[in-house]
Length: 131
Image (cartoon, rainbow, N blue to C red; front, side, top):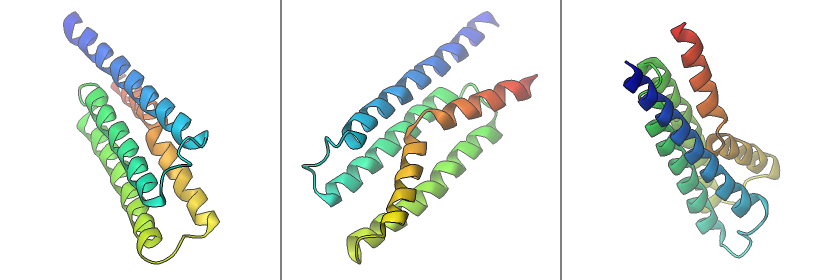
């Protein structure tokens, strides 16, 4: 029993450290304008890769620690937000640049998906629901 608890705890901390690392790299690259030399299309692809990396690390860190319903919530949040971001990206690529307000909302959604906030919130809800 203690060994299972240690594995769960280790999976949580490794997942949290992985998402924090992805978020730090994202923050340094995009927030501090290190991506200024990259084209718009490449920036879209890089942001998508960062979201997928955070999603993958989160799945690995949460799959043993949360009930299946919470994992479904994790998948649903990422799927809905990614669908919205991909649609906005396609509009940006194929038609014209999205308005500044829309891009700001997309950047906020992107940052939420890459940050460890969802990982921690789902972990806390799962922990509290176990009793």
